[in-house]
Length: 194
Image: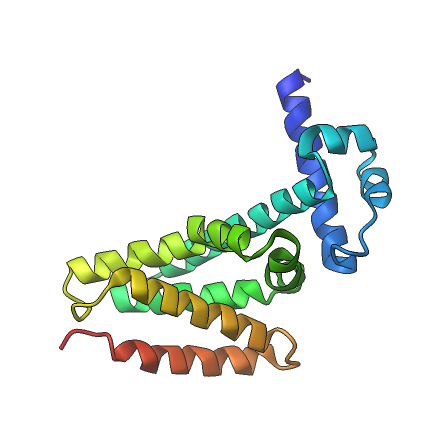
């Protein structure tokens, strides 16, 4: 195996094991020793590639953010209708955010460990970017009233993040997701061009 392939393999192993472990234990209770042992690697490898526990967590959160963005894109692509694409993408975001393997890392530990500014920057590079792109296309096609797209992006993103936090602890997430989808659809109607 080439050195570059070994490096990628080491990084992949560490982030996979760390993601599972951060999901189970949370950042504060996660032991670096356990992570490297489960990955079959050394602490030196972890520090070489990530610099610290926080650096490893940053990489894990980044992978979660990217994965959610991919789900949003895939779900939105199931329709040719711009409004339906928007609603499918929004629903996919909230649904993916509350999945057990994402919830703690994305909604709880992410902002607490890395701070809101870092968390928001990562969100802007992933899900918010897709939301902005979709709204810009909708505006170009005359689907939206004349409105600040940046303002709408932040408003919708904040609403979806709050919705995910609201749904996360609920026992019947499916019903709550249906309610969120219905309210979001009605909310968005106010921005539709007539």
